[in-house]
Structure formats: C-alpha cells, structure tokens
Image 1: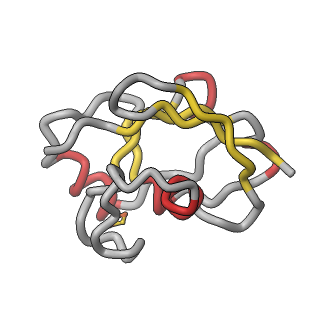
Image 2: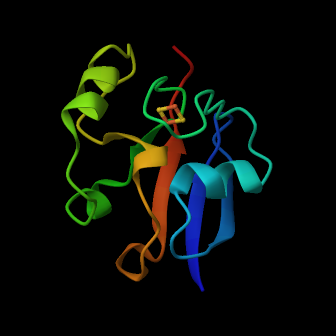
Image 3: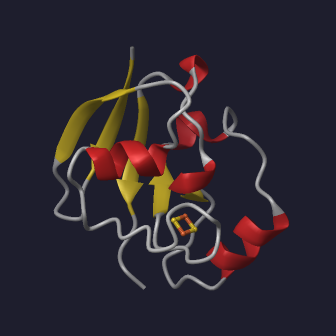
Length: 105
Ligand code: FES
C-alpha cells in the first residue's frame, strides 16, 4: 500500500497508509486530522480541504477543474502548490505524496 505524508498545522509530520481510490482528504480525515474540516464532504463546495502539495508531485496530479480553481482563488493562503485534497484520488504514482494542511481561511 502507498503512503501519504501529512504535515499538520503545527508542522508535525505523519506518515500514514494511503489506499488507492481513496481521496487524499478522506485519508487525512480517516487518520484523525480533524483540523482539515472538509465541510462539504468532498462535493467541491467548500475549500476547507485545502492543502499545499510538495512541488515534486504537482505534475503528477489530475488537472484542476474550473470549480476547484475558483474555490482556491478565494483563499488567502493559496499558492502554486494549492489543491483541494478531496479532488486528489490516491494512485500508485502518488506513493509518498507529501501534503501540508493549509492554514484556515
Ligand atoms: S471537502 Fe469541500 S471542497 Fe473538498
């Protein structure tokens, strides 16, 4: 099974199992990181699942939809590595993916 590296808002690193097919948001929440609110449950309506992806992996992610881009544009903490974690399905090519939970807007 792949692993996912989560950096929480305190800067602590957590290495967790990352089953293929689960979204990065689900994996973060399933591992008890409730600071990632994910209020809309992954239906692309809230942006509270915002993460900063390690630049090494940005090119391996699925393309961003217009809706995801719009939601991230409204964040005060957006950067070129910003993604909504509910829109990233875990796949083998993302093994070892590192994401940092973005500050709350
Ligand atoms: S959980 Fe709401 S947009 Fe990702």
